Image (cartoon, rainbow, N blue to C red; front, top):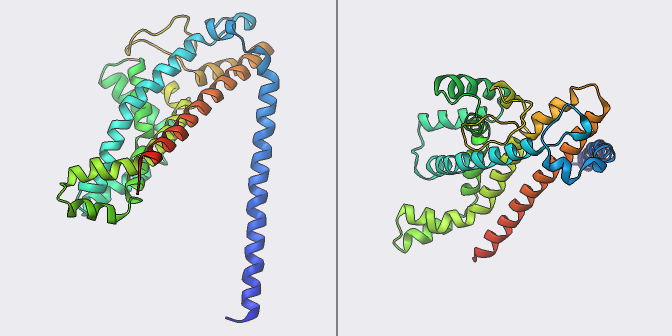
Amino acid sequence: MSKGVLSKNKRNSKVFKILSLTAVFIGFIALGIMLVDIFIDGAGRISWDFLSNFPSRRPGRAGILSALVGTLWMMSLTAAFSFPLGLGAGIYLEEYARKNWFTKLVEINISNLAGVPSIIYGLLGLGIFVRVCGFERSLLSGALTLTLLILPIIITTTRESLKAVPKSLREASYALGATQWQTVYSQILPVAMPGILTGTILALSRAIGETAPLIAIGALTYIAFLPHGVFDPFTVLPIQVFNWISRPQHGFAINAAAAIIILLLITLMMNSVAIYLRRKFQRRVKW
């Protein structure tokens, strides 16, 4: 390769690096401006009354109690449904399924479903869970709809984490007489679990901010009571924010900013749990 071609490649590499850093820098600046604006508007509104009061037509008396409890319900149910299903499907497709046209078709469909707009899942949940199954506009319908939304992500994350486990670990386990299930359960899963848990919690972090699917299934925008079971109606923080933003009074815009801060804190807590679990499982694995 001539010196001219090498110098051209180096120059193109530097230009690409500068453009990439510029794009990242612009993204961080835009995000920082939005966060600062939200904190300026909403930080002063956060108080115990704001957290413990129900929504109200008066901005100064409105709170997020029903939306906050509904969000916690929704995330708990979604995690309970999506994690075992996604983990089991990922293990089967990666460790047990035969490599034929059917499994390839399933893999392609899973990859495609990960990119489907969330409103489509909302319409699917409305047709299946609300109308066909008769769950009505309940927490159960919302949790199952969000489960469909993040299930492809969890399955893909599980498969990629299992692929990252060295083949030598499998071969060593088989050489010692372990069965396939013993190898998967005792050797492969502990090594792959940090990546699986990280992907799962990041998928749940996406689900916690979704509004379109829940609106499509008919989640309420105003609730002055707490849900006590999976068949009760509900609201969540993103829907409450959407409701307040659509109102003309400036006080509701301040309430929406405060609710966004609470939602961001919940998301950061979930991401912190992902980091903690990842490090915990990494310390357990000894090579």
